[in-house]
Image 1: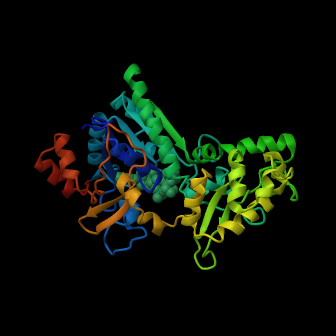
Image 2 (image 1 turned 180 degrees about the vertical axis):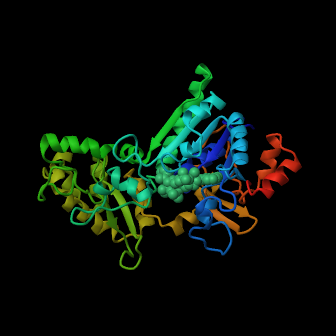
Length: 415
Ligand code: CAO
């Protein structure tokens, strides 16, 4: 069976996390991704957070599957000549250099267009046009500048960043969608275009519900599903909501049996309105079914603290998995707090290819997250990340260079 992006060639100028997330997804959908790395050095993450000396780190391997790697000094005349050939041959150039780096290399949008008018040039930047557009940005900067940190954590604590890499991997996902859309539009226009995904914009997009709440707060001065209601104070900006549900159904994290020693013995519990009767029966609060203080969603809003305390009294008598089984029998939405250790061992995630074991010639077997997007006609097979420059000769041969040319490039340290 073929792959969705068979025949699409990606000139991958990405590094660290945001850009590589994007090009890894495109590779999983079948694109030929040629990762261009600095001769002699490569993507900086190859050597960051190493767990085995002199072996590509998990940071690198887990973000660069299914790609080919070539090394190239794109600032030397011969390197530029090779790069020009690659631009003519590829469909999409993806980059996440600091602002202006591609221009300084001599490959402005105009120059790329002159070489290949069909080429799509896709970029991750920290910020879009505006006061901060020249800034370098990493994950947590984006989380802070995009509204996530301000709205994460508890009301009485400082802003918090989240473990989910919404700035890097989140923006990589956004960029991948932009690239696929631009490829689709090119079918009718015959032209390439620029695609920009700014990390601040990506994070803000993922925090959309908080901008919703900002406007609700400005209009009404209060938000009844927030833990600050009814006893706390609301300021003029959306406050941190702890573990309260962001949706219309109240939810919270509650302790389960073993919480005293196990930092993950917790469960997320959603007190969904349509199954309120079942919730009351399960937790032994049958009187709340008819008690006017608890019988309706609006009556419960000022009493959510009491509601979740009662739920927790019940969940503390069960392990998170026992609670999950019992609650699901009644269609009560809930989720155990799963640790990375538990996820790594979860058989159903292995069965679907969401967690995959990969073999690497230098590190041996390791686990990675496979393609989270499943296409029925384009099945993802995860293959190991390339060694630095592993495909340099192969790609140069595809560009028409013979063995002598390649030896010359090597002598000049271009590759
Ligand atoms: N040959 C020759 N030079 C190369 C090269 C190659 N193959 N590949 C890269 N370079 C050069 C670049 O041209 C640039 O040179 P100049 O500064 O002289 O123009 C230089 O290497 C460094 O590139 P950089 O500025 O992108 O890298 P950095 O380590 O200084 O910054 C980062 C890293 C991530 C902060 C910056 O790239 C950035 O802000 N990117 C956009 C936002 C982003 O994606 N952030 C997420 C990163 S993941 O947390």
